[in-house]
Length: 88
Image (cartoon, rainbow, N blue to C red):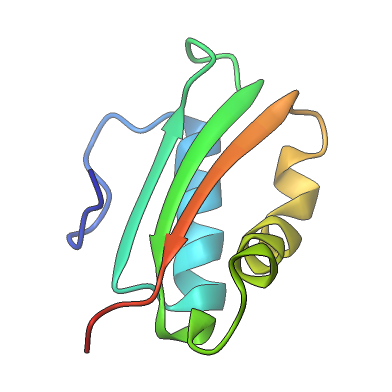
């Protein structure tokens, strides 16, 4: 489900905003953002693969993602975060 290409057309405004912020702040090798609340922006699933996570615990990796988009998800009911360190 992780994507390496630019975001696909059809992302919601909220998905695009979160995608752009994470792309800039974490320079991910792979990134996927999905509104899983039916399009209302209440819940997002975020998958990030970034070298910035190297040496960090899983909890710290998730905190880095949430800290980067804290303002954007403030009104959301929740967020699902999946992180990984790229192989290279």
